[in-house]
Length: 365
Image (cartoon, rainbow, N blue to C red; front, top):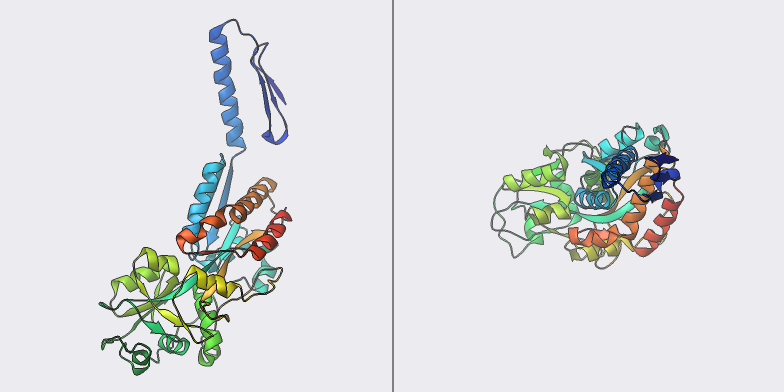
């Protein structure tokens, strides 16, 4: 397309606005030249607005700190692209993307076969980073505790009711446990963090597996609910005697004490990037749909409540322009964003996984 402004100003716009050719010519009249430049600027601005892309996403609160950072950085580096992400919980993210309300969803608990089959558009899980779910607690004067798998399960089953219970005391011989009732805090809404926590409990406790089970939304035996990782962190911080579970970064940012957990090798492990990475290394071959669990993984230093988190994206977006942006965003995350994961207490994708994911991203339409 060509636009003529006067006799000697020609702007050539080639397909997809990828290239601009401008010839101002030899304007003898300075006023005419300034006017032409002003009009040209308005044309560029209008075309830029027309080419702007607003991408919407919703879902997991588990990876929100790193997603918020990534999406802002990507938008800042790509003029006209605006990414609006709402951290409403994994359950809400799966629902909204399968119903076509948002352009992508985010979840820490993989969508089920039934959810994928009922989706209005064919979706695929794209792993982004790995993280740790930690048991947080509020006991004035106590900053470190140990929790075995069976003790954690029985606390959340309501079988262990007091902090000075003999089983907690036996695991923490150097800590004087208070005679105080345990206030249990869990997620109030459908949550990927809950999925990770209950997936772990289901692997280590037969009673939990046969009872509440695993899922983004379960029937909790006892306790009070908080909305989002931030809501659980807030309730624990405000209530002495409470226990909850959140992604590691929420414990770090809110300065809340969190416990070490006994892993499958029998070692007490405090959540760390290294421990999450070792848990991920237990997966020798990741499936093509990337739906895999790494809770209670083998390894001397593997942190037992670790997980991937995923973006749920269309294999072929109904809006080609949006699909192109999402594909480029995913490529940017894997090739550039991963290097920033550890600064927010997440573990980057292992190289073999990142290489596989890039091939999947390249195949998106």
